Image (cartoon, rainbow, N blue to C red):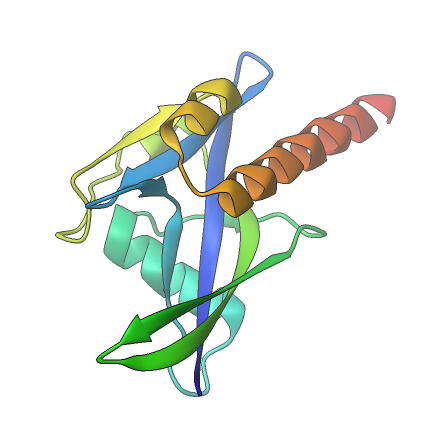
Amino acid sequence: MEIEKAAGVIIFYIKDDEPLFLMLEYETYWGFVRGQMEKNETIEETIIRETKEEANLSNIKIVEGFKEIQQWFYKLKGALRRKFATYLLAEITEEAAKNVRVSFEHKSFRFVRLEEALNLMRIENEKKMLEKAAAFIKEKSKQKKLF
């Protein structure tokens, strides 16, 4: 069985003390920036490259401490394949959010609050991952206010 590795990123910015998440509209679902890892490329390098290619963003700040791995199976030309995608979390500024332009791989994009993102999404594992990311952001912001 062929194994593929990908890296993705949940991109957000804070507005009125609440995260707004970048959601990309693919042909059949809403999701996040993600792409195949190239040979000898790190997760972070893949994320930076894919973010530039898919969303026209080049100044992202990867948030330390958040990492989720998704895996699934699919068939390609009759052969079963297993795919692993490692997701990190990245913050951008509200100003940078104005520069988003999606690639040919996507139909559109939106920056939305958690509830709207969950309503757009159809993949349960990705919904759970986004909920974890939102909780992580909330906890991090509480910690910052303590100091």
